[in-house]
Amino acid sequence: MGFLFLTLEEKNNVSDNNFMRKKDHMSKYYKKYFVLFAIGVCADIMVDYVQLYLPEFLGEIVEIVANTANPLFDDIAAIIKGLIIVGLLLFIGRVIMRFSTFFAAKKIEASLRHEMFLKGERLSQRYFHENKVGSIMSWFISDLESIEEYTGWGTIMIVDAVFLAGITVYKMIVLDWLLAIAAIIPMITLIIWGNKVEKVMSDLWDKRQSQFDKLYDYTQEAFSGIRVIKAFVKEVQEIKSFSKVAKKNADANIDFAKKSVIFDVFIEVIIGVIFAFIMAVGSYFVYLCVDGEPLVILGHTVNMTAGKLTTFTGYVDTLIWPMIAMGQIVQMRSRYKASLARISVYLDEEEEIHNAENAVVMDECKGGITFNNFSFHYPDTDIHSLNNISFTIKPGEMVGVVGKIGSGKTTLVNTLLRLYNVEKGQIFIDETDLMDLDIKNLRDNIAYVPQDNFLFSDNIKNNIAFSNSKVSIDKIRSAALFADVDENIMGFKQGYETITGERGVTLSGGQKQRISIARAYIKDAPIMIMDDSVSAVDVKTEETILANIKEHRKGKTTIIIASRVSTVSHLDKILVLNDGRVEAFDTPENLLKISPTYAKMVYLQKLENEL
Image 1 (cartoon, rainbow, N blue to C red):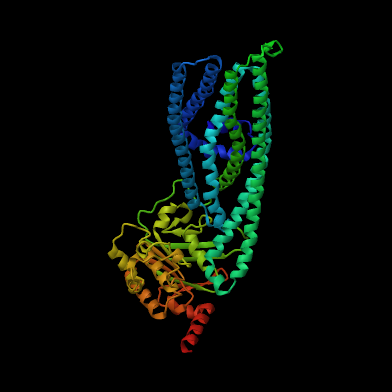
Image 2 (image 1 turned 45 degrees about the horizontal axis):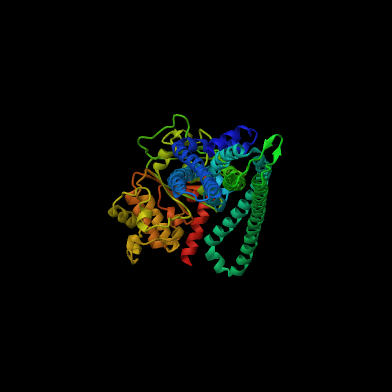
């Protein structure tokens, strides 16, 4: 019923862009779990219908007791049996209703979370530069909970508000239309007012979620940089800053809670007033009937007995829950709309990095790389990081890349991984345009050691075997020996089962670098890129790793970005970048003659060694 309610309202709100997004992203899940929702709705309708026998049975008991001097037990016993049967039906129906509806709601939440996660994997680096991780995480947690709540409880409440309220009102009218009108008019007023309140509550929820995003962002950033905070003794300052963010979040929550309470109290008061009014008027009608002078209004004789009043008040009591549900639906739906709008913006985000039509899959990558007048600037700036870059790396060559900080070294290798889109005709892998290659196939053929040496919060064995979880422990140890880190790992109490901690916090910088190298080496890719990956190790360890690269990656293309000349001085060729341009690309010996930047780096390193 919840999805039917959505569809009907969406048709009436075509101009609401957020609603149109919701329809696009939610309708497929309602269709997918339609059977579960249908079972839940049918069970709910059965429960709603059956429970209306309770006021009737109670009214019959009152009539028997009021009109019979010595009521027979058999007459009351038959009604009690009916009550027991109704109770059993209500129990079974509610179990089926809740299991089916809540299970479907949880499946929608899980499916939507999975879709969002896959979306995050497909989004480009630019998106994550522009949006904080904390905000994105809050969408996965708080906003999805709001959607799950509405699709579960909301569906049940909508059925109750529509069907239970409808059939109850019908029975009230049949019993006495005059008294029914007195009860229905305030309810209609409440529904109209609730629709007006929904927009206000939706805006308040959106503000609350925005403040929660900021709190999440601040907390995530503070804990990620906790070592820096401690090193600079800024704990007190951070606590004060956090308090300000937390207060704004608390104020937004309190504001939302206050408005919600006012709304709930207003509904409870109206319900109480209606119930008291019905009891007072109904009792007066009973008194007139007992006195033998029933009230006549517009030709209608109000023949109200004690049993009928009991039944009618039972209907009114039954009607209380649909009225409360209407109020809760307003708040629940306002949260749902705000949360789904935020998630929809995320899911509607354009995916910049995607395969071309008829993308080329390389059967065997040889490792040849060509840059042809390549220029690049990041999406958020017009300043070029690389300008007219041209050079060719032959298959199997080992090439170093050096240059000043900010000269574009990391940008160069990031474009090879297709982390950003580039213009066609500028980069080629084995003479095939980079933009024509299948992205997965391209990245499968490249082993990458990133500059930040990110490690997952897992054991060392799984971090090294990240590219292939089924690889044997012997190959994992072989990769660790290649990176000259096996001895360090075996020195740990748990060896390769040692947990690295978040982002490898339990390891030293050099250990993280070497585990990252081992992770890339075990992939055995035709192309291997090492982005300043030995900067945190000593000279002896660096020499061992470079010797292993020469021995074990012979015939495979290897690109090593380095800040020390000694790291690349024994490679086949070296690319020298200067302010985003190629200053020279040649052998180390020739570079001393043609590249001032390289010659200066060599000279400075000699001075450093002498000192």
